[in-house]
Amino acid sequence: MPSDANKNKEITELILNAQKGNIKALEELLRRIQKNIFGMFSYLTDNRQDIADLTQEALIKTAKNIINLKNPESFRHWLNQIVTNIFYDYIRKNKIELEVDTNSEKLLEIKDKIGCEPGERCLFSEMDKLIKAALLDLPETLRIVIILREYEGLSYEDISKITNTTLGTVKSRIARARTKLQKELKEFI
Image (cartoon, rainbow, N blue to C red):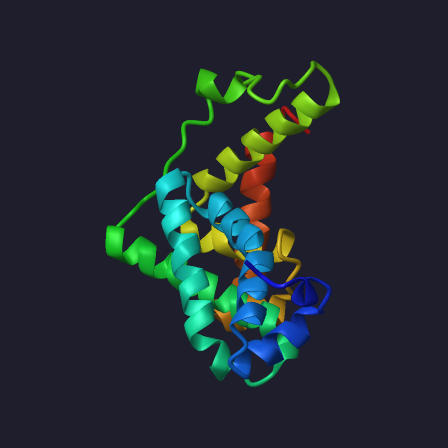
């Protein structure tokens, strides 16, 4: 369990301490980024077990390679690179072409597992499901760039570096992804 002393530290300080071999700082760093990594993978694939496995793989790679991070200020970019590479490896290894049936009745059902009352919270949850389904319906080349841009807030230049594509290709893919998402979700927005 991370020590209380590490709970109040900034990410940069945790990184520097982890690079010096401080296991508690590394544990706290991994604890803080775990939810974000899981969230990214949940928008990239819909297989819950694969999401958990991919998240675990990203956390392990982060822990093993944190010592190699030269500039702690670039941690977010570095971490996004790890997530992207793991996802591309996952796609290649499994030769996956993800398809989601967005017309499925399951997507339109509101599951009341958390005691959600009718209203805004349920509508937000339902809209989130529809957006995720639309994202999962995109080809992986479009899906990864739109998630890095819209969910991670990365610049076009950073996405270009992470995906190892040209700036023009990134802009084009993001534009195509937005167009497809708008068409898919037009009756809801």
